[in-house]
Amino acid sequence: MTAQTNNPKEIRVQAIKNGTVIDHLPAGFGLLVIKLLGGMPARKIVTLGTNLKSYARGTKDLIKIEDRELTKNEVDKIALIAPNATINIVRDYRVIKKIKPHLPETIKGAISCPNPRCITNHEAMTTMFHAHTNKKQVAILCHYCEKQFSQEEMVKYI
Ligand code: CTP
Ligand code: ZN
Figure 1 (cartoon, rainbow, N blue to C red):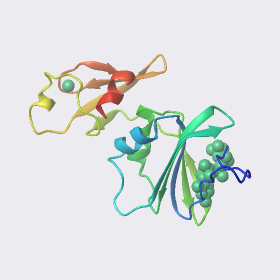
Figure 2: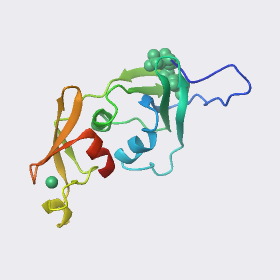
Figure 3: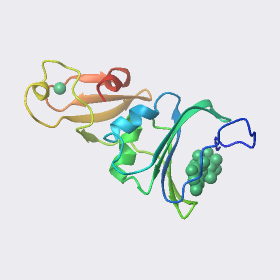
């Protein structure tokens, strides 16, 4: 379902020629997804829509990144916080591929360990977590301190 409208009083989000549209993000998660992907990509046009009307789910966030196709690794990372997102690859104005993110088994970097005693918070090293789903909720286990964290805790450390 698109967030576009024919109502002239509402702002229209422009279609892109080439790139990636990350759609159906829970409202308020857009910025978090950008952070998870390593921040705003340099020299690329990025549009973030937040609290957009969605016919299917009330409200949603949406991200359009022009001239950049996300890699499988990046797409899968999105499953950590938004497993129901749809990633659309756009070429020459057409959606050529719709991808659903799959929870990756391991996540390197991107998240810091919430455990202040963890070695990763004291040495210059890359974090590593093992992800799994527990009753539909995503949880991560630190490879180094072996502590487990819920999705709610994890999002504060992205
Ligand atoms: N989109 C875009 N630029 C394009 C084509 C599509 O920005 N050239 C955006 C649309 O605005 C929409 C998303 O990409 O937010 C997916 O487009 P499309 O598959 O056409 O929309 P829907 O069929 O509504 O998608 P879904 O079924 O996944 O909800
Ligand atoms: Zn740890």
